[in-house]
Image (cartoon, rainbow, N blue to C red; front, side):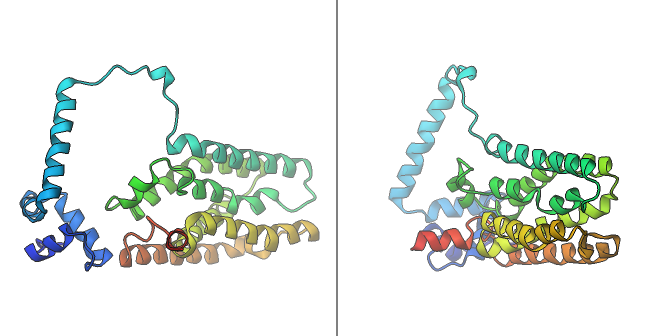
Length: 272
């Protein structure tokens, strides 16, 4: 929103936004973060009961700040953050790739297990990092403005930054070109995010992983040959697919900013 919202729009937003679409609500919230004048208009538009509640909350916060922090015994704090809860999935992905490299190094007559497994290796950690069952602050995260695509991309990049070095080591040990595993990894990650805007990131990751294993990994191991989509000639196709799927994610996020906050599968479950 490049201009100030009208007082009427701010009044409708203050009343709960029942007649304001999601895109407009997101734009108003983003504008209010940086505009003190509009926040003053919002304060005047709030009904007296809500204003009284906000004043009491502000007084309580001010009193707590003035009293100073209470002593905390840090050694008793439990690790309940998202990173700690995703760690087992990262360890699983790492162990899977190391086992694939060891298997390929031992049985060199079979098709490359590293190339077969690498595309779906990051999918389970990506699903875990955006799952309401893993995130202890999911409700807060899902309702805050501008936490859809930016937060999802930051968490996805965090997963890839942890998995990519393992994939690089596995590819280097087995002597494969980086492009043969890197582009499929990026393609499947983008595909998970794109499909996640429809069915949820966790379900998209599981569906793509199972489809790849059933349609590519199992037949390749049975035939003893690497599929054509994992050879050097397939790299342009993987690159175009990755770019196209990334564009889909960006367009979906622009059309519906909250779509990646509360996925449609979860929304349907809540409505039912």
